[in-house]
Length: 406
Ligand SMILES: *Cc1c(COP(=O)(O)O)cnc(C)c1O
Image (cartoon, rainbow, N blue to C red; front, side, top):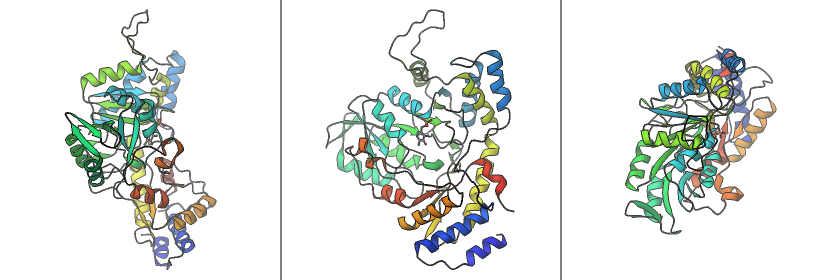
């Protein structure tokens, strides 16, 4: 530990919110010492061959929905994740939507989703005419809590033949979407076991978890389909973009078909055999994505180092703890987070840090509190409420590395 870290650790913190917030500020300054910052929450890191690859698109005119960079990008996603198939999409929300349609989520169905997630998880369910059914999270990995899920399904669910029915609403509960929140892997072994027992199809929302693994297996490979996002604030970016991965040949063909306007031929005449979607990632975005994936390892290393510094700086802090990877998996450190004991302390810290140029954001507001989902079916959501009241994300981009005081 540096002298400043020892000094910060020695400072007595009382239980008053402003004192705890001051203490958090002092500890943060040990890691990110540049007065006034600004330290963004997560800025894109444009580096490597990005300019060359994008220029190639501009020079050749292959800027749109067909091109060699899209194929290359998909190959690279397969290499990194180990999946058999990857299909690039215009964004992560479209990837989730296509995944749900492809596994047969129908109007009137329910799909189990955490309430603690980005709104796109539930919106993709709504796009299918289905209803999100909210379940609670656990504190260690921030994912769906297996024990709470099992208890909830025992209470409201009934397996009839090979489907799970919600006894309270009469709807079929078709699928479950575990989310790897802020890059922390959800407890997939336990969740997949429960899903199997209840005939639920697992779609993973891996939008935030590129580089996160459980043992040697990349997140997104535990369910039938995994969905990624490459939006500007994610670990790597294509500007806007996403991808689905699967090991299933048939699902892969259907996903490609559905996301490329359901075209049936490569010839000059345009023939389509169903209502498809124009969800294909443009070549110019894929070119940027290829350059970004080439430096993924450096980005992950930089983020890990930043996270290790945060871990050390907050190790003995009072009234707050730094969120580490869960025991069952390895986090990509997409967004580093603090969990306070109380909301007023979190709010005081957020005000203090934001005013000092450290961009930090409260954890997601629960989806079940938003007007469009206020009457959606749900389990008890006490942990979700606690996380969103007391969590704070810290500056986490790979570019923050250069600022660490040695
Ligand atoms: C970013 C994100 C998405 C959606 O991705 P977009 O590319 O922004 O459409 C979905 N789910 C989660 C959890 C996300 O963080």
